[in-house]
Length: 468
Image 1 (cartoon, one colour):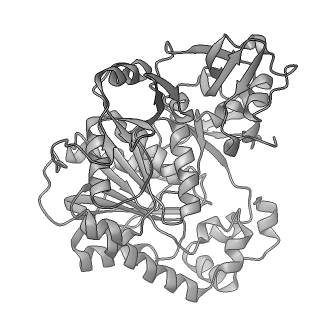
Image 2: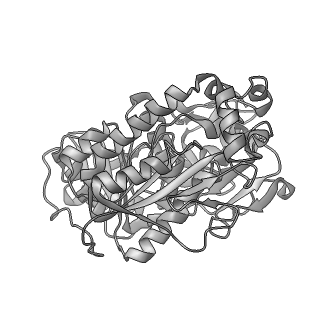
């Protein structure tokens, strides 16, 4: 909700009294207007966002050059076709600091093929950022306990199109109990009292109480305790919240280090507007262009092997059936060169994986984790030919020589995203005969199939954009 709506609800008195004493200037800043920031998809280079360059503001200080920026106002993102194609993600600038921390961790530890668990991942801002940081050599398991939110997470992962993410919907305790020592890094953006969202979310103001702060702090300790065993010795936990109080932040960080066995890490080079406390970093809206955010890094006790723990040799999985030679040739035609492993779930959908992702998927299946999405969904092989899935169109590594490409202007692209077939807005002549990859400003949106003087709009009905 907008900041104007939030300001109609007064800050909780106990909260205001505390922050006025501890952080002068913060309470006043929470009545202001939130900044708008976006993070670009490095796998889908976009050089013309937005169409009016005057809408782009300054870069985010803790992002890589060209990775993220502020906007001077908030456009209607759903009206931009390339937003639906995963060209960029609308994300709070403060939460992008997780990417800054992850890069520092990987550089100092020397991990080559990082295995990262994003424990509380929906709707996908941090998960897609982590996927961009670790690249094709890394593996990300993005987990969300709430099933409905996990489906949104899976959708955003598909739109991002990096091919290195597996989406699960499990309790944090499942990872600690079933995948001991399997992850180099765990990112735990734990549920919190939401003080950092007071500027834009009136519901968080109404829900806040000192008692709820203590309940959240206890729940956060339980979540980290439950997942701690999944972090290998020497591995690193990135702990974060969107709240300001010490109980959910510094006190919990010190509790984890002392009770579970770890060392709180610090890094040089943090932008000076971010407040360093010795047990983490605070983003205060009166000091930095961000909503409230806190992050800390804890290294688990034990020796760290930079090569990482392997998940075992690739072996046949009864749930992930192999393809025959002719099917492999057809699958490779769609996603080009590289070391790929393919498998079919039962008699149905074919997926493609990097070797590390394949091993991770096998590990998750063997440990009885349910997968909502993983790797690259290619589609169904029917009589030796692939019927491509929508996710394949969004995969950044798709071989665009495998099908005709239909480049649409924005008006026609919006008609496509409505799943419309209005031949005035989207004429059949825009498509070649047969299957077409639908593209706007170079970013793929999905598939369409022309049959003579008509075409089938293959955009998923569940994803269609009904209002702009």
